[in-house]
Amino acid sequence: MTHLDESEVERFLGGDLPPDEQRKVVRHLLKDCEPCRAKLASLSEVLFRAEDLKEDARGIQSFSYDAALARAANRAHLYQARHRKERELLEQALDTAPPDAKEGEEVYWRPFEALRGWSRVEALLRLSFEERYRDPRRMLLLALAARLAAEKLSPAELGPGLVADFQARAWAEVGNAYRVNEQFDFAEATLAHAESLFEEGTGDILLLARLADIKASLRIDQRRLDEAIDLLEVAYDLYYWAGDLHLANRARIKRGITTHYTGDPQEAISLLRQGLKLIDSTRDPQLAATGCQSLIHALADCGDFQEAGRLLLSAGLRQAFVEDPLNLLKLRWMEGKVLAGLGKLGRAERTFEQVREEFLLREREYDTALVGLELAAVWLRQGKTAQVRGLAEETYEILRDLGVHQEAFRAVLFLREACRRQAVTVSLLRKVHGFLVRLEWNPQLRFEP
Image (cartoon, rainbow, N blue to C red):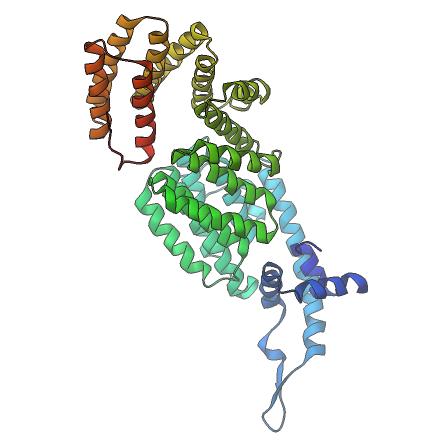
């Protein structure tokens, strides 16, 4: 059988399962299934007490199973009913308009009046996660509110292990929100505290996987890509072991994206294809769209423009990113790259010009420079050398004013001088462009003319 869900564990402890299903559960637990044993242990903390130990006249302790099981059955029924009711209230609350979140204040929200304990933490964490693409600041405030709610959970009611799990999860999501807001020092410290809380919990495998997943994202943002890849391998194994294939392949997709950052698009293609094939796209449509966009990028970097073009036409990414202007702009950039690779230079030129102008308006100077180099390569293939020279001068000035990494400036300076000597080639433009892309993820690189 697959892993037990909470309702099966509750029915098992409450004696509500038919005999054949009870036997299946026992056989499953005897197979050393740690995730299910952890669920059983966390609920058992609620159901059994030390008072069930009795001492005879000789001072020898024995366990009163009849009394414990009778009371456990009664409490399991009560817990199960309360759990079901809180789950219903949680889903109803999440269907309403989300609350306002203000720094330093506990979130007030009318549907919260009915939510108590773990369900309040769960609601806030879900709302926080949903804001990760739309509003990072709001994501952080909701995560902080979830952490506050988790600190108020009662160990007497839920058991100390389960309380520690909720607190570790809340602290981890606060750390992730700090990361999204580019407050990396706070993220590092918060995740360290989440890991210490995990040690006090039930050993939940999914929670451990989530901690590795978030830490990998932080390492990516810190440009520590090898560490990130190792952590994503750990996350994949844990998610897979816990039986969540969607999250396992989500980690695989992230590993593919990170592998591409290291300069290995061929390996990235393999990982991305496997991950996209096995995720549940209805569970996280944004992940499916982002993974597909990354696959197109890797295919283009490997020179497979035909396959990249087919995916662009069939994947529906414009619709997927309709409410995400920046990703939509990056998709247009990728369209220009594919058009150039297919030799459709006029359309590629117009696309790159539009994308470059939009990046300038958004004050994304580094991206402006990268698109400019791809536009220059198209112009050079069209014989527009004077325009290439002018764009090289403009790119040099943009990066000089931006104060970029010394090696980036050195590469663009070399390109400018080549243009002035009328010695620029498409190969050189591509070399400088590729170096600037890799440098963004590996600051230790050095430009070799």
